[in-house]
Length: 324
Image 1 (tube, one colour):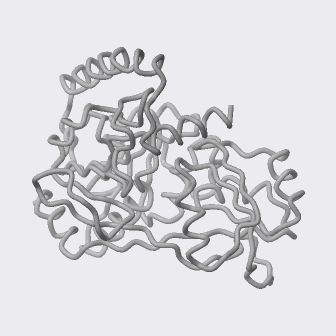
Image 2: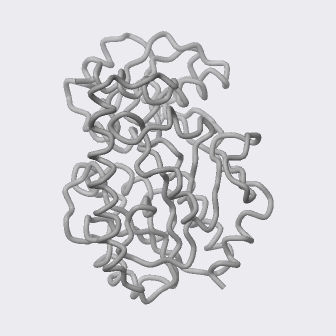
């Protein structure tokens, strides 16, 4: 299954032509998706608080989580009290639930837990995000809807669309490519942000903003006194893990080997044992660390690479204009 997942990801993002059976399924998915989105839009409600949606048009890997953390920090600096609403992918919560930093990622989801630990504001996770918006009215004064571009049930004051530096892959819709919607859906966005680069070729006539998450300082989340290694074994459970490998190499680290688990992978004791058997320092992303920290041996270092946001000057001011 893991090999199949990697093959699909490579085919999507390496501009490869999808096989015939995938191209045959593409219009079926497109029709079902279009009907679902139209039905959601017809039932859209206005939340009691102004809402900023952060989403994408491709499946996974556009930097939504670090962007939402950055946006929450910017809003707080303005004296506002943001509340993040997310689906809780990788968790079991159906009804909206206020996430606690000590919650299990298997219950609330890995991204929701990371947002609660690093966002500095309340996070509500659950499939019912309309219910989450209602719950949030007692917790803050502005909503951030994570992964909200296709969640049309909630109307928004500002629709931010993130497009990764790699663009939109091979240009096909799921399953033949990474697109969730046709490229014409880009017109629905109020603000388009290209993530992961400070230079790009514009995809639209309107101005596109730059935003990127740069690698921070590698640290041991287990708190050991170990010196930073020169070589690491990289383990990831994220979409398009090549970005993580590139970040490690940009810090001068040698990658002795790597294992790519599927996005939102639930790590097990067997996974930990397998990683420890590599007999090399293990490096993971912050999103993976929240799932590993409670099952990792306390005497063994677990190296985490955080990310630091860098936004183009003026981006947040444009977001504020839409709120006003």
